[in-house]
Image (tube, rainbow, N blue to C red; front, top):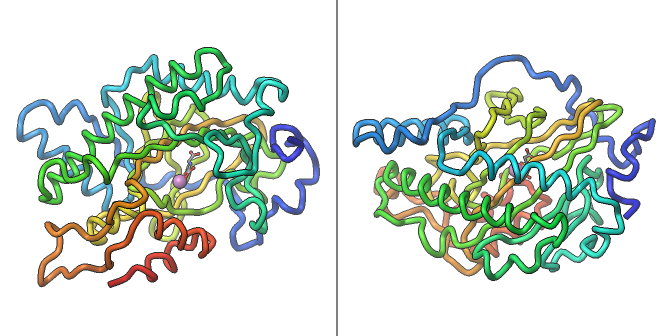
Length: 340
Ligand code: OGA
Ligand code: NI
């Protein structure tokens, strides 16, 4: 467990294997106050057809231009969100003895407590983060693999997972309406899996050299991030990094690669990263909603026509993930592989 960043983060200088090459380093981590990621009040969608249409337009515009938006008044209880953040934080703060049975580098495990990412053994530079990862849908199938302590972990994360899964289906419903797909397009197989990666970012003595999460795209359908009050998440837009400011009780929602493909490039998966800071721990819980391994991903028939031919050929999420991993998370190379 000595690999865990939490067990040594106070060292100076920062270890060589956590220092990114200069072109990938964050340098000055304070991003200029520029564009703001759109914030969408989801309760408006229930206030008549006109308002619903406006919400759909806002979601699609944000998903096209930023690949990201934040949602407020989304129906997931504020108490459940606060408790999720606090129980996840508590998990990472427990003494090693209480967590060592989950610590593993075997990524086929049902519940994984580790550092950096799955590619630890092969990656050139490690990320400044520890994580806990497990499936969370359907709840009854996976819940018994989750941590038993803190004692309230399963109840709270269970309630949050159910809330987010419902929220995902609502938002995917609005997106399918906006793309003129048949109603329920994303239900069932295309959104039947959900993985939680709970992330713990210790302070870093040299934030300009290391990264909490290196620049990447999400290889799933759509992601919901519950971040605490410490900023750090940034997206890359128009050649610059913009911060995703923490808003109390908002979820950060981002388009994953599979949704980009299904929308035939109308909605965009956008590169993002997490920078560290010198004084505060940051925690976030990323819920990755995705399609079942064997389902077929392809540009939806409803978005493809003679003026807008399919950009991608059909493939399975399993094939996509394998290629993504093989390409060292290079999204462009992976997308190119699946071009029509
Ligand atoms: C991720 C991610 C964001 C965060 O794990 O894919 O982008 O705020 N996390 O930790
Ligand atoms: Ni991500």
